[in-house]
Amino acid sequence: MKICCIGAGYVGGPTMAMIAHQCSEHTVTVVDINQARIDAWNSEKLPVFEPGLDEIVAGARGKNLFFSTDIDQAIRDAEMIFLSVNTPTKTYGVGAGRAADLRYIEKCARKIAEVAENDKIVVEKSTLPVRTAESVKRILESNSNGRKFQILSNPEFLAEGTAMTDLQAPDRVLIGGDQTPEGKLAIQKLVDVYATWVPRERVLTTNLWSSELSKLTANAFLAQRISSINAISALCEATEANVDEVAHAIGTDSRIGPKFLKASVGFGGSCFQKDILNLVYLCEHFGLPEVAAYWNSVIEMNDYQKHRFSHRVISAMFNTVSDKKIAILGFAFKKDTNDTRESAAIYVCQDLLDEQANLAIYDPKVEVEQIQRDLGIDADHPNVSYCKDAYAATRDAHAILVLTEWDEFKALDFQRIYDQMQLPAFLFDGRNLLDLEALREIGFEASGIGKG
Ligand code: NAI
View 1: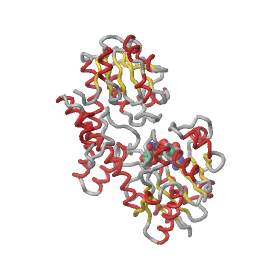
View 2: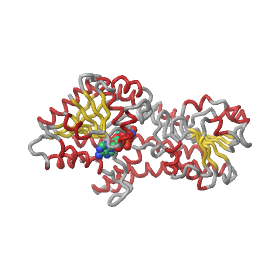
View 3: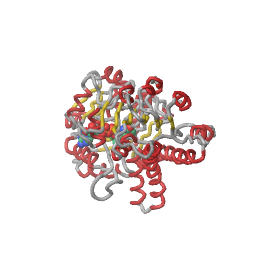
View 4: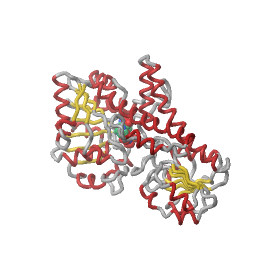
């Protein structure tokens, strides 16, 4: 089968690379309007950093995996077309700040209607509001001219940083489709693709609407756990309880479970906030204001946590960080990715720049230009410098902020760092990554999240 994927981003690239790697009998072409991105996918330096991705792409590229900007041809050739374009929060008009901006999805549907010459199975891989498939179907069917289109929903549950292992051994794959004979046939075609390497019992099939809504619900539940433990972290700080101990104590209850109970400076990433905002908007649209308010509080708690962290830093440093050098260790929204979308580091850095601090930023994978775009600053901003490693960032610093849980930060020589810092040497661990006791023995004024 010939497969096409529209959108060569963090999801389209890795997912299609895995399908090509696992299914040598299928040919997969990933297309995008962004020429630079496609060039990067065809180069040695891929546009997405994920452990294990380079090897999988290198093994399949040019054999049964192709990256191209010839969108029309790829659509014409394909029997199955994945839509993996971005669905950001709308910034204009009705629903601005909450609803999903579906213009990219709609453009794809119209493009398929325009150029397809025969029947197609169109697979929603992007995260979409429930009932989007209805709009996609109407656009395609009103322009069908005798061609038949089946729409499937196949949301992606990979997490950045572990995308390749998640794709290799997913907890489940979800496929929603029409419950008509043609719909079931289309579902079966996609089941067969995944069944090449995913145990059949892990491939779940549902109707379209359950599948679309399950993705938003999964992200809402995951983010809610983080906001719940972060809310408790504030109470821990007020009461001398230790949030790691509380998380362990409740996580051993099998009804609660141990995962996603790590307190931090706040969740980031391109998905959680946007998908919950979208859920909130949908609830309001369907006349459910109480449900909307409930989920909105997950975001409010996350905003509170990010700003609470900056305020704690300022307050501990004698209520002023003006002209002080602050080392920022980590800018990505989590470890093992170069993605900074909605990273807590952006908000914390902006708070500190508002207070006229001097920031020395180091992240092992994020490009300097990306940091500048995220902070909305020019390359020569006088208060921000970019460092080649953690030692350069912490030289003469008044404080260190750990904002991403990169493994390499655990292996730093903190005695060496302490010796080159201004005293008192403050360290704020926004990820509860480091051994605070050991740091205090060196002399650091070290604090974490939710630890008294
Ligand atoms: P991205 O922004 O990295 O990639 C989207 C790509 O689509 C861009 O390269 C863009 O140029 C391209 N594109 C947009 N309109 C196009 C068009 N009309 N024709 C051709 N290409 C077009 O986005 P990402 O992170 O890959 O996300 C894609 C979808 O997957 C979103 O709906 C997101 O919510 C969802 N998702 C993302 C996850 C993540 O971890 N990033 C995880 C699970 C789902």
